[in-house]
Amino acid sequence: MKKYIALLSVSLIAIVALGFLATDINAKEEERKQINAGRPIAIEKPTFTSQWQRYFPRQFDGWKNTKKSADIVDMIDKYPALAIVWAGYPFSKDYNAPRGHYYSVQDNVNTLRVGAPSDKVDSPLPTACWTCKSPDVVRLMETKGDMEFYTGKWDKWGSEIVNPIGCYDCHYKGELKVKRSFLDKGLQEAKLPTFADSTHQTKRDLVCAQCHSEYYFRPIQNGETTAMVVTLPWKNGLGVEEQMSYYNDGKNFPNGKPFFDFENKISKAKIVKAQHPDYELHLTGIHGKNGVSCADCHMPYKQEGAIKYSDHRVQSPFETMDTSCMVCHRESENKLKAILKEKYDRKELLFGVTVNNLASAHLEAKQAWDSGASDAEMANALNLIREGQWRWDYAVASHGGFFHAPDETLFILAKANDYAQQARVALKEILGKHGAANYVVPDFSSKEKAQALAGWDMKKLVAEKQTFKDTLEQTWIKAAKENGVLDEALRDYKDDRASWFGSK
Ligand code: HEC
Ligand code: HEC
Ligand code: HEC
Ligand code: HEC
Image (cartoon, rainbow, N blue to C red; front, side):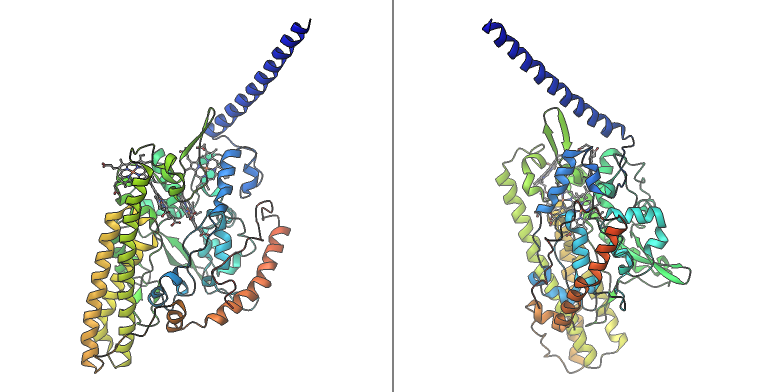
């Protein structure tokens, strides 16, 4: 009898276990179906990333882990010359290396660049500065229209744009989708297939390209006011030279003049600020040319039983080399890491040399003005600075460029440095003519010294920002909660950071 009971129990356990397995397989099958069919899933608020969790727990967990990339690298502290070359532009106040997608809204709110708005003072920057930070942007574009989204100052959307980059930025009803219309416009200008017409592999690049590309704010009249519309400068092609030829051609702009983002406050050079052309540089590298996509390295496949899924913790592939690189490479991880280190060091060296030459040129130009140089005398030197700085910025604003396209990055940096040197030679001559041949540029070797030369009162900026955080930001959070647009399950206000915290 005992024997039968034992047998029966074993069978029962086996049946129950099989039952569980079947449920598990069914669940996995269900998930796979949902993914592949891309059919509507019942998500009430797609901007609430927490609501996607119950359908796609694996992708959600990966996404959530972007929070682990939390360290702030203060780039102006690392390269004080940045404050000089960007003088007069908000980037000279505060600029950090990118970190996890989870922090996109927090970092946008905390940066000194967007200023310290209050009920009396507007942010100095336009609404467009939110464009690549949140799925709420997609929601606003859908409900209010592009032009309304792009009109006004940054603080206009403070209580509406509150959730960090999430599922709804890259997916719609479970499929890959881009709903920021400027990407398709840029692709069309470049005579490339739109997102919908692209191959699946290209879509795995383009979802990233909607944010990780060079852009500018194009002024477009909207009734009484001017909207600042995110626009990709791709009409002449996606390369560094083609983009600059676009910016240099006045015919492309409403005012008929070459484009510039700002006039450098020290030298008066009219500068185009390059911003993270990760996609464009990637296309020029060996991986891009071989059709390897952003997602292949930054979102490698993971296997869990029968389920294969994409690791949604977008991060440095150094952390996932076995799944990101070893699927194609046979070299050891250490060997690859050593190769990458060499590429990084070379870029860093040319980065430093070039930006110091550019900063010196800006300061020498100021001395030339102060010594009485004329507009006509300065025009060539200022243009050389403009050309050099565009290329330098393009090569380094893409933090992964040293790896994505090492040859191209070093080639662009070499050209940038050549322009900077030519500018300095031209300026030396002007300085000589005006009795200032012995001028020596002031010391800009620390963040404090460089920001003082750039004309910022940093103590004041920080104090105003702290007031903003204690007052208007709190009002925004409260309003967002009341209006039901804040995904409270996800926003963690305890973990608030900025490079300037504690610098009062
Ligand atoms: C909606 C805009 C947007 C999209 C789409 C987007 N990114 Fe980002 N990405 C950002 C922003 C903004 C940051 C910087 C966040 C910060 O520092 O707070 C960032 C940061 C990063 C980082 C740095 C992460 C770290 O841990 O240091 C990597 C790598 C990255 N993105 C890769 C990608 C890849 C690959 C894709 C496509 C699969 C992608 N991004 C799609 C906007 C976007
Ligand atoms: C930065 C862009 C981006 C974000 C944000 C993003 N995904 Fe994805 N997702 C991708 C890419 C790229 C793929 C690969 C698609 C392919 O090749 O079919 C993918 C694939 C998927 C798939 C198909 C199965 C798989 O894993 O390959 C699902 C399901 C999915 N994502 C769900 C989500 C959910 C849920 C979120 C939010 C928690 C999210 N995604 C956030 C870009 C993104
Ligand atoms: C989908 C396949 C694929 C993946 C994934 C991939 N590579 Fe490659 N890699 C290639 C191909 C193809 C080449 C070109 C080889 C050739 O032409 O001989 C290449 C070339 C290289 C080179 C030499 C070219 C150069 O730029 O100096 C390095 C280094 C390299 N890969 C590192 C990596 C690292 C690190 C990763 C992971 C982060 C990675 N690769 C992921 C396919 C891949
Ligand atoms: C062949 C693999 C590979 C491909 C393809 C690739 N990346 Fe990268 N990416 C890397 C590696 C390796 C790094 C360097 C990571 C580091 O320095 O920690 C990097 C760095 C970055 C960084 C800087 C991260 C930081 O915190 O400094 C961003 C942003 C980025 N990649 C975005 C992209 C985008 C967008 C694409 C597609 C247009 C792309 N990557 C394609 C491997 C790849």
